[in-house]
Length: 364
Figure 1 (spheres, one colour):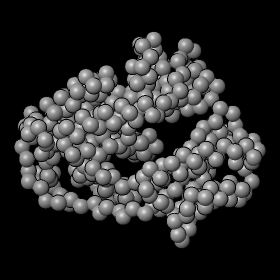
Figure 2 (cartoon, rainbow, N blue to C red):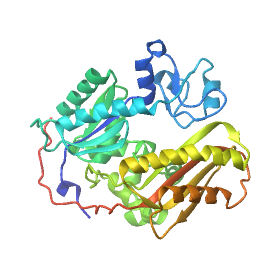
Figure 3 (cartoon, rainbow, N blue to C red):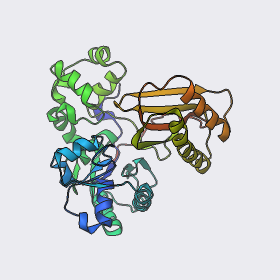
Figure 4 (cartoon, rainbow, N blue to C red):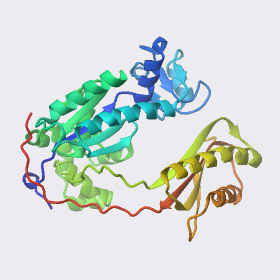
């Protein structure tokens, strides 16, 4: 196992747009600025995709049911999502990233990792680069971004949350151990709510508590993830910025204004979802051997049905399999969401490889 003092020191930036979808809507609709707003759903149904900072003051957050959000804030503004617009701005932001480095790993439309150890500007300071990127994003798009800077992806991601919104933070190599020991366990990137609760039952409330447990104990309690937890609390995270992330699946889905009751309604509404999947397949040039149907019922329970073929199916076959999966057994409850996707793609998996790197001074 690598010792912290022998680890490669990279200069990693994590850039995260502030309340991206909601901020875009407020940018394009001046009358909504400064007001609580969410993207997605309406007062009766749906799920919040993003919440403005004004809405967050009412305890509203993404993935919350829209009906609950409306109860928390009666004057809440509901904006329909406009993904074409979000993609347009995301592309502009990505162009700014590439002005500094080609080592850009997008995580979503609104966040990415950048490795600026060697950069196109010849700048030694990753902190300065992060500041320049944020300034350029503001100048070009009118939107605010936050950033985290450190020597690995885990710490950079953690740092980007420290001074939100519209701020940045740095965790230097010599500061990492003390910072991680004081960090509440729920603030560790990659440790979700369920895992955090399980750790707290074991008396693990901070990084210092986690650090006291052996690798053997953590592996016994958390399986393969135990090694990850053992490493990150020691500031060890070897994953490199991967500019060409391997796509695992391709899919489309839709949440409906009214629950679907009959099979005929479901088949009718599945067709445009299938057509969107085909559009994405044709745009990407990839195929998949596994077709998966996703069903979310009125009580929010989720079911998936899949079928894997020997050969990559043509588009009409994907439609027929989608229908077959829909009809293969009774639909027990009204359906609020349908999704269709492909996986088991015709892409060669990239090998994760950590090469030897020179130690590079982490200049401010």
